[in-house]
Length: 466
Image (cartoon, rainbow, N blue to C red; front, side, top):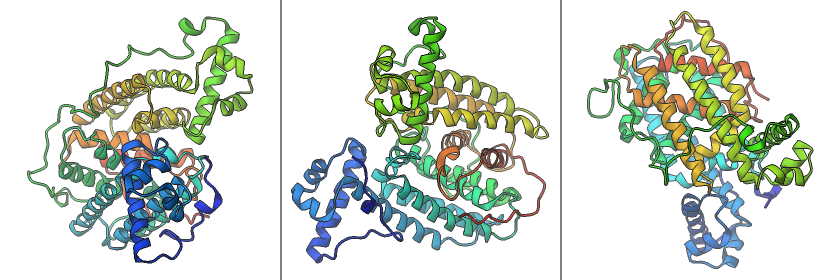
């Protein structure tokens, strides 16, 4: 079902609705709460209007008196969550490389987490509906632009430091990582960390990423303990898989499966390229086999000669992604171990990664969201995530720092950066070029995770987006 124009017609944060009496307002609120529960339990795509009506205890006809579709329900919930987040940011005190600045940042991150938990059913479905060409993308872009503008204002007003980054880009990166780290936490991916431990560690990373001149004495843990964690063994990222993971995948197209004919392999690669492009643009659920055929320019019979359905094509892409990602992560370990005066190696790796992310965005999203019925794909995502975090643990554990740092938090944050930043602002007024994505990722990694403090450059003013 395609969302219609009237569903996303909004002028500011806060849902629009017909004027109703007190009883009607209660019913409307109950329906919104029921939708939130259903989206969390079943996911956006698996939830239908009947599920929500049953959860609330009203008839389908009653529900339609207040909302035209589940899409409108989701939009109204995002508006409500967005309004709460904007209220929090309005209460955020001055930021900067000082103890009050760090305390204000820590408070804001904690309040964001509270709002995230309150609207967990919405935020867990964020990436599912937020593909660049998905039906609700225009509305999601409105949220991204409104909140990024507010955050840019706060970063630009920071006192006592010149951050040396375009503040728009810094705000985009911060919000993308913040959304993903809280998503990991909500899904139970926090590797044995308590909420307070994760908040302390994440706040330290963000503080140094934005304000690298912050003295070590300022970064004081707010949770119990001294916060100076020794390198931690990798804890669980995901729940144990339902069955054992697949054997090591091979790069695709796999000659053992498709044969060695050059013509066949080129056709399969064409279908994989088309699937990657359309899944990445529209999202897996909104894509049909017909969409892939149109993108690839092949006949339906050609597709079904090699793949049973779109899920089989995504599975093939996932195996290819797993092989390539393992190779890239292995090389990143070596890059992070290099001297601080070798920044080009990290940037070269990031350029390669951003292009990798562009092709495999739909696979990375499917693994993160766990929104597929294919258990083998969930297992493969689990295997890839665990091996990636262990590699990050090894790379980060050998770095000496003069401030509290938990390797587990660092690895989670690095994974969130790489997974979320390259695609977060696509198609919005804050869309970034490849070069700017690389620069902001490199700065966040070098400052927040590697303890490298660059010379104090002249502040780059925020660029007004249109």
